[in-house]
Length: 446
Image (cartoon, rainbow, N blue to C red):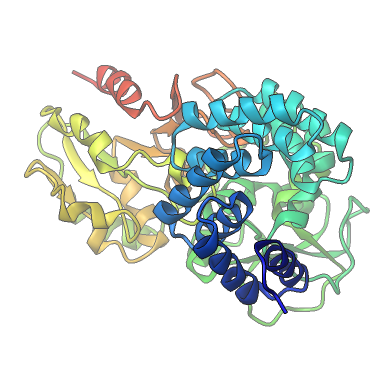
């Protein structure tokens, strides 16, 4: 019979080990009713609340856990991670500094420090932290992936891509097409190779160019992408395009799209670019041209304010509508809002000024977006698939980059080898969209 706090704690831990989370959580709740300051119960319940999206409840519980047991490193790290994902870097850093002091030989402390340093825009420091984690726990897959991403962002792509396979060990979804032999660089001539999308639309647009070396080497390429992206690649220049989930023809090999940069030994100084490789449908482009007449010499500028909310770094890389509103007072331009679906809820509290034409509700998919871009003189957008599409079409685009930037944008430069028509505006401090937008406004044509 469970009749003491110690007994209940042991029973809760046993239930967790046995996969009986509901039972464990009920026991932790019972413990708190007897001992409201039980740090392990507070930690367990706080972590469960965080996983289910109850952020304020998680924050309250984890804060109480740290207050009850200041030396409990696991509670410090849990709270730091929650604060980090809420954009509170200073508070997260303070907790992790204490965790490193109290538990310098605990591997996950250094993994969490690596993540924080990466978000803060310090990939070199992140690499050191991930290395320390892997010294203590060589099999830590999350740290191995963190090390890979840090190396890639530092421009050490050969090393980084050798570790990039660790992304699958932390993914909620296993790789598709595991029954097909993997392409690992075997001679492609005369072979049919299935290249399949695996990440976001932006990654797919960026790396679609890499099927061309396979085609040039004599391979038949089947490019599998989500249905929404099929129209962008339907001109035959990227092999045979099929919708994800559709029946496939016989193939010899399969390869995930994001393996191609490593397998083809793409280097930061020699990113393949032979000109724009996505072209909008001419008829659709003409139709949109009638709806977007030029008024005198006024430049036409499109903009968006949010990316994919499912992206793990969305809290850092999306500025939001309010942050971009100072740009819309630039009266020498005609502004066109390109935001579709996610992010449009911001319009309820912050309606667009009369000077802005809202196209978002009229855009029916990527084919429409591609048809609009040729009529714009400039696109301003956060790091998103929209930025990649504009770059792939050779359209002028200013991309707003957070300190927790994707590896592809490297460090420092306002230019990127991926897209010659793109200019990067980088945050100088995590979360400082206001400073970045001030620099964007100053760069707009008078």
